[in-house]
Length: 400
Ligand SMILES: [Zn+2]
Image (tube, rainbow, N blue to C red; front, side, top):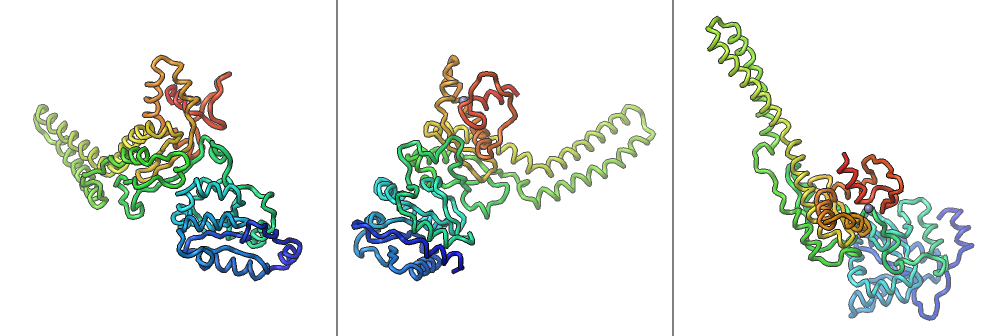
């Protein structure tokens, strides 16, 4: 413990427990992070005599189910500390999110201290809170400071009625990798899991069928069957064709210099030139096969994403894909843009058509926060600040 912290520690005191409270701190963590968490708790308890920390393996009532135990312990605690890591998000946070009606009630009454132990996708409900980073050199003193701050002076975890302040148009909700992304050959189109709605999407997309259907549309994109997908096939074939091209040039020269009649000579030269060009085109084609394939597949995938976005748009979610094996989901409210379309005859069909053609690229722009150049139209107010709203984006694309 450093000297500066000792001084702080003397000045700060942990607020006393109220009649309804049994613990100063409820700590939730994944079993993978047990050692780190126990070290932190051990140090806190050693430095603060009388500190009561609730740990699930020590303080849960045996025989009761985990959810009931968690809810009761949270209600009996002054504050809640969550140790965030990918394992936590996938295991314990799921329990909290699975029953938000119960934990929403508990958590919105308790100050939550999220601690980022290892990089992970911070759950949507916590993303508006400032979390502490375990790697911060002043991490421990920050935890103590928060522990000693009276609860009423700390931000609550779950914000009030929807839409959540943490949700804003243009917010990236999730980046989703395909199954087995690491082992996937570069020519293979990714397959995405449709088992359940990922946590970060649950707040806006509750119906698993919509998610399943939308992602299922993308899973229908076929990978190539051509033998050119293998690098070991493309390169030798390309080299062979280039060699043929090189070899045909001297043959062409011989035809050129041969003393034959003009008719057959013209025929020979024309055939030779055509063959030369054919070898060259085939060589370039096989060497650049992958580029052409990726471009074509990306166009196909973008159209499929557009199709999926027809299902997702009513839930204020758009999907985008920048590569063959990664998807992004963005929160974006399209109601105002849809109304702008409805001012035209047959507006609804136009809106659907625009979603189909442009929503994938638009979602990618939102994810990167980078929009195509556009002129400010005098007096025309967009529906997204800052950046282009969907109807503006479509009109820019149609103009260019
Ligand atoms: Zn708009």
